[in-house]
Amino acid sequence: MYELCDVSRSFDGTAVVERVDLAIEAGKTTVLIGPSGCGKSTLLRLMLGLIAPGSGTVKFEGAQVTPLSAPALRRRMGYVIQGGGLFPHLTARENVALLARHLGWERERIDARIESLARLAQIAPDVWERYPIRISGGQQQRIALLRALMLDPDVLLLDEPLGALDPIVRADLQEELKEVFDTLRKSVVLVTHDMSEAAFFADTIVLMKRGRIVQSGTFRELDESPEDPFVTRFIRAQRSFAAG
Image (tube, one colour):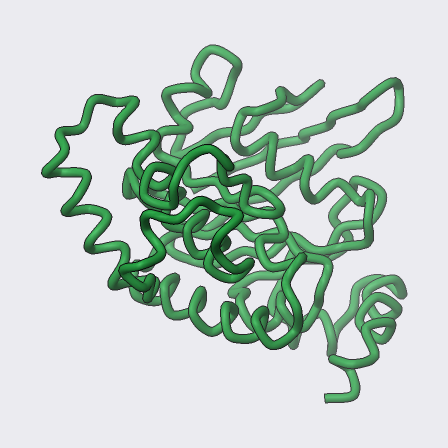
């Protein structure tokens, strides 16, 4: 799905992503994890073509992601930013339908797609005509996910989509998201700082530190066969998960 080759990116002379090689497998969920400032969100934005690498190449299904190609390629990518990013002046329905309307979809097609997505994400009928301020944080995240799915993208990219939610709502949404991923069989790239969340979702975990990939693999591989002392420290630091 994605192939990143020797990718680096700096801001104001500071390396944020440094010489990263990474292949994202189609139909699987890959989780990027690491401490704050390790470059995981920057890596996601590089995949989206929102920023360009300083060096190296990013390819999406064989096509190089460049400032010229990125706008068209992004129509095949669904993106959920931290906090959901819903437009406050649009209703839930209008937020979900925004890109489809921009591309000139007919009303009947939009309505049919929204109806299908509503069943998938268990959105109550009374939510659709509310503005974001009038719906719960959990419902806002569901709406943000459906907006990302509206054009039936080849890949979903999610940047800490559940980070601002309370633990009970977050646990419920984790279950719902996992069911959506399994049902749609989408390729997914998810950013989180929570190892328990990474272990729950991931086919492959990519652990980063200071702009570099320290180790990638299943949680069991990272836990039982760490390739660097940092891997063990990071896992052990998340005591609530380690205790379980």
